[in-house]
Amino acid sequence: MGSISDEWRGPAESLVERLRPRDDLLVRERADDELDDGPDPPSGSRSFAADAGPFTTYERRVDWRPDGTGVVVEQRVEWRLGFPYWGWIYAPFVRRALRDGITLGARPWWLFPDRLSVRQARATATMALFSLVAGLLYGQLTQVLTFASADIGDGSSGQQAAIFALVRIGAVLTAVMMFQADRFGRRRIALWSFGIAIALSAATALVPGLAALTVLQAVSRNLAVAGLLAVDTICVEELPAGSRAMAAGLGAMAYGLGTGVVVVALPLADISDWGWRLVFALSLITVPLVVSGSRTLKESGRFQLLGRRPDRDDGRGAHEPALVEPALIEPTPFESTPVEPIPVESTRIRGSRFVLLAALFLLLNLFIAPFSQLQNDYLRADRGFDGLTITIFTVLTGTPAGLGVLVGGRIADTRGRRWALVPGLVALGVFTAIFFAVSGAPMWISALAAAVLGTLTVAPLGVLAPELFPTARRGGARGALNVLAVTGSVIGLLLAGIGVDANGYGPTFALLALGPLVAAGLALAVPETRGRELEDLNRAD
Image 1 (cartoon, rainbow, N blue to C red):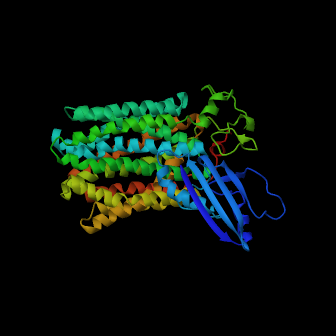
Image 2 (cartoon, rainbow, N blue to C red):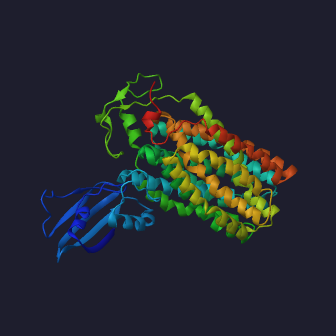
Image 3 (cartoon, rainbow, N blue to C red):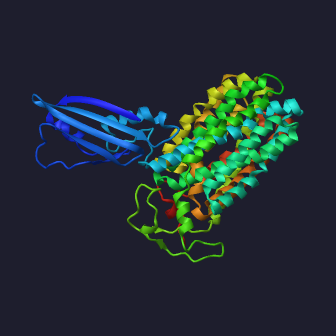
């Protein structure tokens, strides 16, 4: 619960603005009474409640009284944000904004481009919580395999690349779960996926050898991805059209925070040869997070509406009408009910879109997977870093990447997806290739540049797949794209393993960097989705 109390003295004219209901990006107020058209009384009070905005409770009260030639104005605002888990981050910014309101036309950097409802705020916050959990679960193998391989394997780069490739075959499981999400609901699949993923990840701490580790992580990591994709799909389906990219960016930052927990815990691997097992045991700390998140995670309103459509495609080509009447649209997931009929979505995937995104994701992961999975081995084996030094390097060069995520999300929502995607892909390929070719200060600087500029792509990449496919097929399309993206990862890891063992890191990653550069060219052909409703993007022909 937040509160503000302020007092001003000034001319009577200054009272007018305080007595006007606010209507800005944060809140739309309604007054509890009507003001007379005549001059304001010499003293009085007026209260305002929130008619729209991310507040579970909200009241602004203005009292005024005469003071010589002017007035004394007292204002008190009390509110509670409907933004669980992360409200403490927004509280200082909200406090400042509620004091005087947000200037018409202003776009504070911390605020969504659209005014969110309580339901939308909860969906975003819950998505970010599950993103943190997924980042921790997925990041464990990435960070500690070099230590596990040295303990229970031969420690070679080729062996590690092969394990990463085998683990990624489990992406088929992700696709299966996402197809089920289209059938049974995103929420149910998300909670089952995360529950099993946590149990198997914790069990990895007890494995006797690399074979068992590979099997458990193949299931655990890919179920974590399925759970995250399901929760993320809920968020995309709930949010206003102009704020989806920013939400994707926040989710990516939370995912990075989860990975950061693993990075900070990495010195545990230095305790002993078996110290890496303690990092996998960290999975247990996510149990209370998932239990709490299950209470605030609600099923997508669009999915619920789809399930109630009498004309829903049953897989045999059922007829679809051209329009859905406004009365059929559930008002709670959205800011307001449309006053005009909206187009019905197609229930079929457009092949050209799927092929374009599949090629883009495949080329990008051809590069990203070996970079992210082998970076620690490169630092340990080629640069002599121990666990603590790797942690310091990762924190110092990776933490500023949050700036790129925020900027990329803002650009994608206000200028367009390509404006963030194309320069980010080019910078990612160029600066990462430099990172693997140099040492000393240039290595640190190039890693920082790759992190900050490369993460411009995170937000637009996070929303393109769910935006360009209809609600009835959104989960399955995302699962299938994930399989193809993972195919790129497997190819990249195998090529990297062979190339690094034969020629070293520098030449190998210079060649692999062609992946994001070609992907940048493909990104120019991606349909623009900024500010467009999902139904409009996926109209039935």
